[in-house]
Length: 327
Image 1: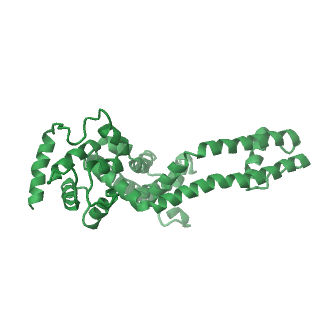
Image 2 (image 1 turned 90 degrees about the vertical axis):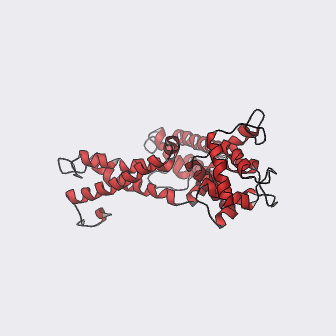
Image 3 (image 1 turned 30 degrees about the vertical axis):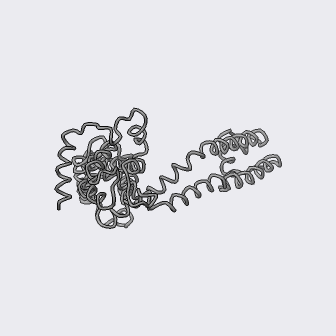
């Protein structure tokens, strides 16, 4: 922001020193998060990659000797990167704070299933129009095929920058047909994306709560295969189901950060039939759909009740669960 003022309130080494201090704080936060998370989960988290990218400029600043401009006093490539790219990287750090951003990604993932064919046909129309324009327009107006493609794309998107336009009647006919076709055809992907976002927004509470729960479980070190054993431990009446009180004790023992009404919301999320109880299959299918058939499918070998021997960690969990239940 200091570059928006003239003259800037800070400049030279003072400004670069402040930037280094800020990026050092970002680096310490990133290192702390890396030490608290499993390495695989840390590296696969897109937000952590954004944080890592935001601390890379500190090396460039130190390499340049805390000088923003080059040796000749001009803004070289490094200066352009520090001034133009760094603010974008820092804003990307805030993405993890916007939970609704996950809804946008979910909507695009749903719409992307239909978009490839639509985009292919859209590109085919642009190429066909560009070929027609390149044939009917004189070379002094459309000198290259790239220029024809530029005119075609600008017309189909109804932007019309005005730097290129057809001068022949045949070219004008192609453009008129292309504009009408573009308006009608562009409404299809826009409608698909809008419909997908509307569906996701309607189901936003369930999506956000599911994602938050899955993230908390991974941070606590639990996997999908641990869930059947945990349900066995906290199923006090041995009916294969957990009621609300048993579910509360399990969530408290797992230390995933949910308390009070959040636990009730989580329980109601899995209790789709409203029966007042849930089983481990409902829990795993909602949170880990990809692992559901690996655990409960033929040959899964991990389904509760098969008598699979618990390891030492689950034996310790049984003792701790009894203490929680007594308290």
